[in-house]
Image 1 (cartoon, rainbow, N blue to C red):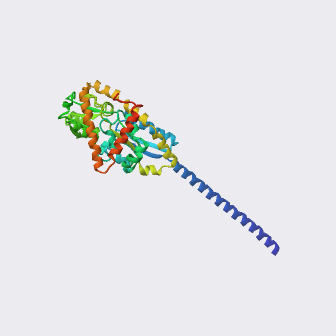
Image 2 (tube, rainbow, N blue to C red):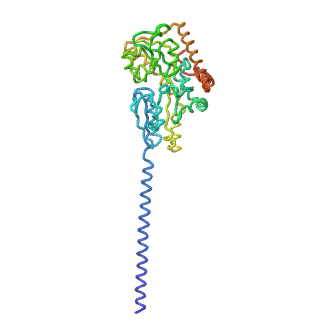
Amino acid sequence: MTGAKDGAYGHQGEDMLMISASIRAVAMASVVMALASGSVQAQQTAQAPIEMKLAYFVGDQHAMSQWLIRWSEQLEKGSGGRIAVKRFPSAQMGPTPQHYDFARTGQADVSWFLHGGTPGRFPLTELINLPFMVGSAEIGTKVLNDPELRAKHLDAEHKGIKVLMLLTHQPGGPHTTKKPIRTLEDFKGLRLRFASPTVRDLVQGLGATPVGVPPTEMAEQLQKGTLDGVFIDYGGAGIAFKLGGILKYSTELYAYVTSFGVGMNEAFWDKLSPDLKKLVIDTMTGKDKEVGEAWDALDVPGKKALIDGGGEAIKLSAADQAKVRAIGAEVSEAKVKELEGKGMPGRAVYDMMRGLANKHASTSKNFWN
């Protein structure tokens, strides 16, 4: 009896061991499945696209807006869908002067901003806007993206953002509503909108009264008569801000350019993986000629829009043009001395920009030729 019982108990023990092993196997399988499920979820989460908010202050029809759209599509494609760009054109995010701070504070992840929108914030960068510094957007954009110039002087002014590109529009001049500027004397008494502090000084030097107005308010102020005219390029006047029919006289000085930047919020930059950072840099670097040419190409259709609206193109006499250049030289020298007096390397930056401009002038579009 005892042997039989022992055998029975032995079989029961074996059965219990088998059951226990089965339970352990099922439990292990459940753990593995849970881990696998968690891994898949983690991968899906990791692959969820990073939304990049891109803000700019003109409509999508503008050449620079079109370039930014193509760039954003390159990012989306090159990242394999890991970046999804949400665009905010036409100052949808807010007024033009705030676009730099949109990127700095993270309201936007990337913004195209106007240096002159916040006067005095970028004093060295804005030396590019001095009268007759560069003869085209291509030259200006090449100068501003010179690696040494940026590393030594310009990028440091752009606090709180990662500078992706600096650029200029094509050279501009005065455009008026009622009183044409046919001689140097005609500037006197006119209230003219300026785009940056350096242009303000030129307007004043020419005998006009400089007035600061955001670009999105130009049309309204011109129509009200609180402005007699604006210093602007043909592309900005005819295409970006649609001033055809409002501006009636365009005096072709090609006297100055206005500078802009494209910048990324530093925290957004920091969270990108190394390969995505490389993608961003690769798609922005070496585009100076391409971007500059796109801006310079706006001159013809912009002028046509003004002429079609009843405008007239005017050229000053050679003597008056020489006087304007002399006034421009005085404005430039005064600005350099002002910066030097504040302990800034105004002379070094000015000389470096001038040397780069002369270097690129021989191989680039130049409206002065």
